[in-house]
Picture (cartoon, rainbow, N blue to C red):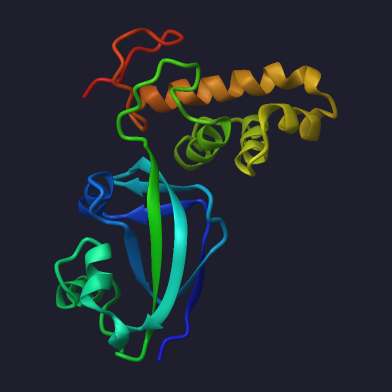
Length: 209
């Protein structure tokens, strides 16, 4: 019997075909072998196909044995029945025992990130979202100072709170805004996030295919 335990933080990785099902509202859970313990429930970024595609809120976490999985569980995960689910799990994990533990993480979609359609300064993302995505995808271009700023923002602080934390005063929040805007524009330029607006937003037009 496996007794592995892993922690889920702010990022949830799924295969491309599963990402599409999440966006279509078909897949409302992810079932993982072992004990998975979410560290955060309010906002988790889902990544699929090498890009962030959605933000979800975790609404329930259930632990059970493989042998206890049902067709209902499978359908929540986007499968037709439990046999199809078991086959998919074996493709990922290899052989496992009916007595092994699985974690069912149920979630609800709170924002699609595959086609952002807003023209505000951060393309409809919060500074914390941009910080978390930027740290994951732009490590090759970020300076040490920018990484420090993004890590503070990624912890969930507002720009005002981050300025107080980093500089002891809110007067330098302009510096944090500048970094967030730079990171957001670079994410769009690289196609990490896709903006479908045709209007120019801060010098960056909607990303093209």
